[in-house]
Length: 141
Image (tube, rainbow, N blue to C red; front, side, top):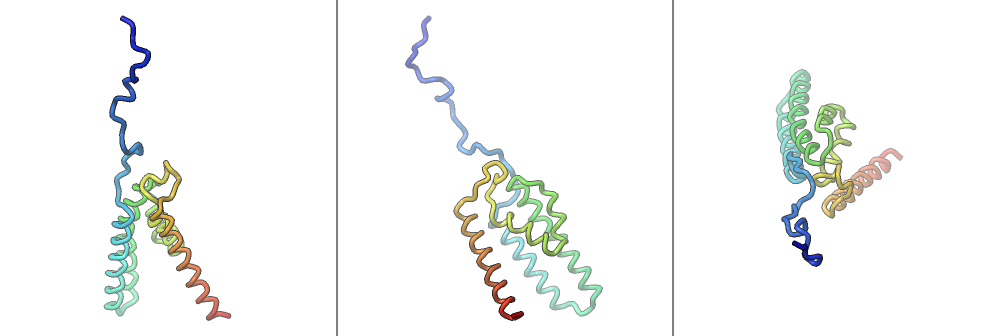
């Protein structure tokens, strides 16, 4: 039996996945932002009630450990090593780790491209940083 040379290949007729990236799990940007803001708000409320330095230190470590959970799941979502969440205990490094969590879309490790929401968020973060930096410099100088 001779095959038809004009027949559509069977590979084309099969269903192709609509999302070629692997599933990463974790949480998205919105859930990360809400969780991080919620933990920060609870931390702010609890610090207003504390009068002793020892209690302040214990609460700081407690809330820092709480903030590891959203960072862990968000790092997993963007395709990075989730164990970077241990660095949230370090003040400036913890802030630097949160920036990709807010900006990068799911599966960023594969695509290496920012979507529109990521670009807008990055512009807002850089603008806020420059605004605060100019304000601090105007006070110092």
